[in-house]
Length: 380
Image 1 (cartoon, one colour):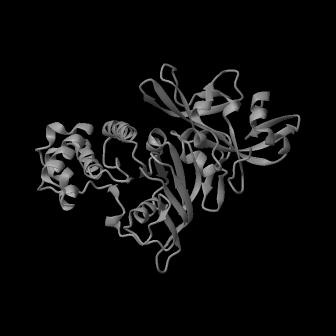
Image 2 (cartoon, rainbow, N blue to C red; image 1 turned 120 degrees about the vertical axis):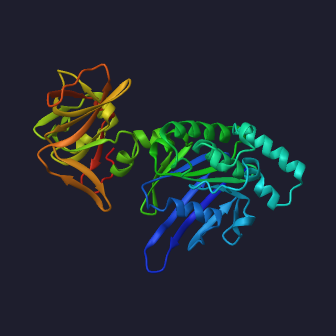
Image 3 (cartoon, rainbow, N blue to C red; image 1 turned 90 degrees about the horizontal axis):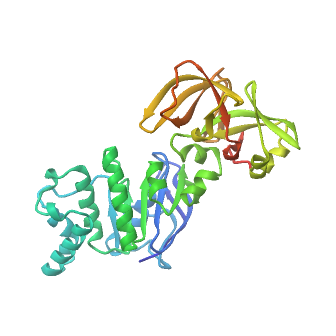
């Protein structure tokens, strides 16, 4: 397999600012690396520059220590699976999968052997004689993936590979791609805007925003230690609740005032966030994930239930609380000073919740996050 490095990679279009700016990235041999971010952040442009479909404005694309900026796309030995499957409708599944080999003038016997191997790997052996219109969405996606894999490329690129699938097929295809990548040990870069796909598939994730990488690391590292408010709210489903809070008390015994209510911090929370002892009197953004809020009559926060989503074994309770909410912006944060802000609480579906009733909550302070109220940077 291959390693991939991007060195100060940039892409500019005439009359516009940089779409990708000074991007540095290292992908290890055999790694499944995921680029994730909102629409328009430049992640697909990065993928197209790696593939050679887009020219590089500045910087280098390096494979196995060799700069390939001037190497034609067809000579890079890189396979790409596109968001649209781009299967040839007049060809069967077998012909679609084997098409790259036929273009390379590989012997017919070798083409047939490789097609059968890939079809067995992707569980497509029973549909090789069908045409794309006779396939389900998941089968079409796997056929497109098979066409990329049949070449045995040095590097596999996938651009939003599951965006056109329904929820069930997404889960099945996600699992299939992960198993295949592990079995083949194929160095893979995948682009998605779905953070659930990124968290479940990637060995490492890079979160992109406005053409730059905000944070890169293993999925759980990004989830537990986001570098800023944007990453904190982007990674995790449902999204993190973020409220304006004031650090009160003394440096030896600080607490957080949220609206007219307060949250005490125990020794475990202070050990995880020792910086809070130096923030007494300062306003901060308090991040609390829905699963860190628990219904408890002895809790310190009281919210009002708006409605509840029952999701089988779980339910998401939507409520409002008397505090200002905080959101990331392009230049920092924005505080919404409405009298009551929405929050989400994750709990078991067996718990009965009545709409508009008061909901007393205990905050698991060992899981809270603090962010700078002006810049959005994490406070640790």
